[in-house]
Structure formats: structure tokens, C-alpha cells
Length: 211
Ligand code: S3P
Image (spheres, rainbow, N blue to C red):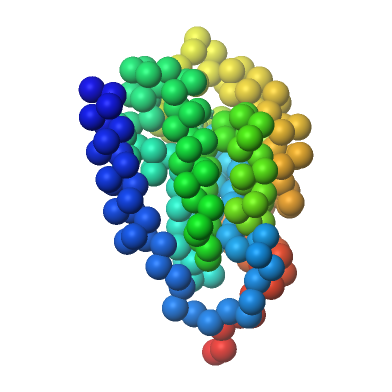
């Protein structure tokens, strides 16, 4: 069953790449080779997907989400992948997915909260582009993730404590990987986007499109 899922996954991943990674139609000034995408890292609930989609729309970049690539390629939700194959299998798949992104550019890439765990992933993230660590207070993060049940690592007796412990343990890894860190606890979504757009334009050497 696993090999069937893997076979389908390879085909789906190939289709995804040919259909999605079409370069932006906008003309931008040249970017340094090392900063060709924006890469969002950070704990569960830090807003990587929702802020990432808004950033991609503003920059006219594509949006890429490693969790979505994994669920599409394996045709299975993250909770089911963890339940059926375990976390090590998920991490391996996540790492292979990340490695497969190296050809892309002009994309905002949102990643799963645990992507910084495997040491080999950290240089891969940095080579993909400008890495932004999004974070927020434990209360803010927990209030966001408690809205749904799709985080397998939080299916514990005390998900709030689990979440805080996971976030604290990973903090040095996020910090060591990121080029820029933003704590959004007391920021509105509009302010968050404005700060990140300024940073992106600076880091990626983008020229805003002519009016
Ligand atoms: C995980 C975070 C999740 C997902 C998986 C594992 C983690 O992504 O990759 O459930 O280890 O923190 P989000 O950060 O988008 O919730």
C-alpha cells in the first residue's frame, strides 16, 4: 500500500512541479542566487500558511506549502500519515519534499513546524531563499492551533503544555536557521504583512512593479 502511495506520489509531485512553478509574469530586478524565494519557518499556529499566501499574492509569487505537497503526493492527511507510518517516515518525506524544491524561484514557501529538526534540512532551507522565522506567544499559538484537530503531535492529555514544550525546544533551531525573525503576538495582520513585504523587497532585491 505504501509503495502504491509512493508511486502515485511521484506522479503527482511531477505534475505539481510542471503546473505550479511557472515563473511570475512580473519583471523584477535580478536577485542574488541565494535569495530567490521567501521561506517561512516557525511553530504550529505561527501563521506560515495564511501570511505566506497573502505575501505570495502581494509579491505575485507562487505559493508552496510543504505539508500540502506531502498530503497531495501521498493522498493522505498528515494525521493519517503519522498514524499509519509514524513520525520518522513523515520526516523523511518532508526532507525529500524540501530537497525537491531546489529548482524553484519566485515562490513563498511555507513549511511544517518540525522541518528544522533534521540537520540536513537547515542548509536546504537557507539555500532556497530568505528564511523568515514567524513566532508568537504560547497563548497566541495555542489559541490558533486549538481551532482544529489536525496536528498529530498535539493529540496528548495536555496539548497546551505539549505545544509550549515543543516550541521551546525548537526555538534555537528556528533562530539558527532564520535570516529574519518576527514575533507577531502584538501585531495586526496588516502590520505583519507590511513588515514582511518591506523585508522581502530588501532581501530579494525586488523592484516594486511600475504603477
Ligand atoms: C508539525 C507541524 C505541522 C505538520 C505536522 C508536524 C510539527 O505543520 O508538518 O503536523 O512537527 O510541528 P504546521 O506547522 O503547519 O502546523
